[in-house]
Image: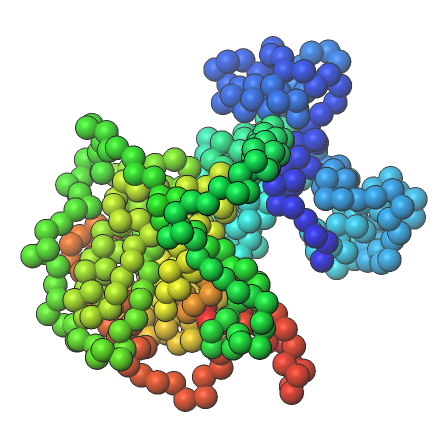
Length: 511
């Protein structure tokens, strides 16, 4: 597959709207009260969109699949000397202006045809196709799950809704997406930090260059030795599969004091509008009655990750009726889980100690990598990330990185108790390449506790009884995982390599 830089995909989409003068300006057909005004104003100001010779932006204009693919190809490293190896689409004629762009992107796995032999290059790009493009550009393609009986695009739209990509856009999946709507979709990705814009990318490069220049004078400065962790990756013979389950020589490492920022909670902040809910609780509200103590030999260090941040771009999904955000559910569940695991004898570290903590990151992916980095830096034994689901559906599910691994055994143990203890619909154990379970080098799981946007699940999620049942179920699952020794369990590296004996792909890991 082509090596691609996710952030650059935005430019491919944005370049689609360039015509003539790239200087920022206002357009009479995009008035200030238009929902596209802010998006057009910003993207025009940084020189990536512009109007036409007559001074109009033409927000209702549609674009073709050929145009989109050509711009994607140029942005993703297309060279004029590129040679077509295979052209699987019969409707792309030899010599067609977009022929090589289509071949390039298809060969790299970036686009699909409308059918096995047809690309329809002159066809208009639909809302669904554009949303899929942006979901993939934002790095969320591995979160996309197609609902049972749903259409191909339902999972992409659900994921886009979850991360705010479709904010202020009424989506008509099968209809052509007007230029103005596409600009809003793209701007949402930029505004929420899901994708780096051209201006941001250039600023980051300048900052990196400045830091490199400044640091050149600091080579002899020695800071507190406690701030450094000595790592030796040179002697590969000393690294066993049990100890290293990532294919990266240097897994992401982050230190909490560097990546956690505590923000103030506004005095008028409402945790739920028109609903009696606060995420805080007293210790006497935590039910320890069904928990068992572990032996000293089973004592592990567990990192518990309350999904999302208190403020900023990464506050997760929400219940629109009561305006309850995902992080205001994941934190109390994680805090209850922390107390219960410590009661059982485990050592526990939270990625976010307080409800109003934020994990830093210039982009969402960087913030997610920092969460995994905290666990890696601590050399934790287990990693558990707590989330809420959204976008249609019901019930509880647990994710691991790969099958036939310790991560899957942990996920199965936890999911079994979640279904039994909560009474929620059992959605089972699934695999996904979520950043926090992919970048960690220990067994890791991500729990989607329930659907925050479904009334029945919501009532359970915000109740102390529901939060107790969820945290108890996870704690019991961890206990069984730790105290039950698996027979014949494979321990595999994260990443992909071939099994020398069977010739099959071995992609599991201590997930």
